[in-house]
Length: 328
Image 1 (cartoon, one colour):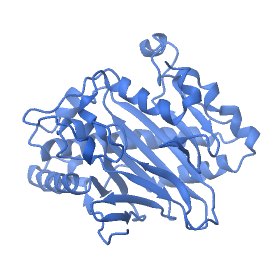
Image 2 (cartoon, helix red, strand yellow):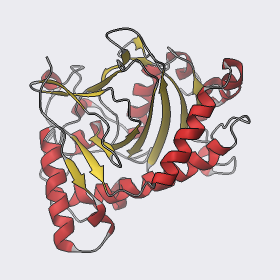
Image 3 (tube, one colour):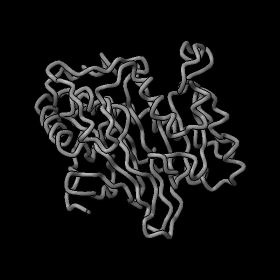
């Protein structure tokens, strides 16, 4: 069933300033969106048009390379850092292969970083293709601007919950887990246009830049709705950890991708998550309860114990079961 609901568009530019009234207004809009669908469009973010153009062009150049060239930065070469390229069908969602190829990136960490020396999974150096040297600068710029945008939006989330604006930066995102993906969905003649199956995101906040092809869908109580591209905006959605923090008041919402445009599609999700060692517990005044009957996967988010990194590894290990052995 398809619903006629639409995601709200919120101008987050005031969150980069210090006008308390404007910041409060934006926070109230974010809070309403998080309580309703858990998704919204953000305009006024920090990602420049020049950065998006450079990233899009470099990404198309990379995916146009011969398969053997792309496999030179395969994820199997990234070791415990879990970075690099995977081919079409190499990633699973809910046990079914996705019809996309992509590249995984994260915070760039050298061999002398304490986390790398300790062998902490998902930490290390990124892999970049020799054949598209411009991709490195484009990814670096995008991640820097995305991090700035995410910190600002999380200030709005904090204010919407009645917290100090810098609450999350002090408690969970002083050293955030930041993961970035570039996904390429090949053109499909299939009516279904399968891309990625139903799922929720794992962390706090996802910022998604997408091209003009569309395909993202969000599940509401009334059915699936399209989240088509809106120029100069990011699609923002909350993840499982913000759901857990708020006791389900802000709920992580299932979404999927159906690439039925008949054309290839690019998307650029940036995941802004708690620190790897963070213990994520309900916020003051929020009570954890069994939410399994309401979730798409029938899992109880609040039953999990351990650090965020443990939760993340358990989830990502299901996406790439062959690689999971290398990081556990």
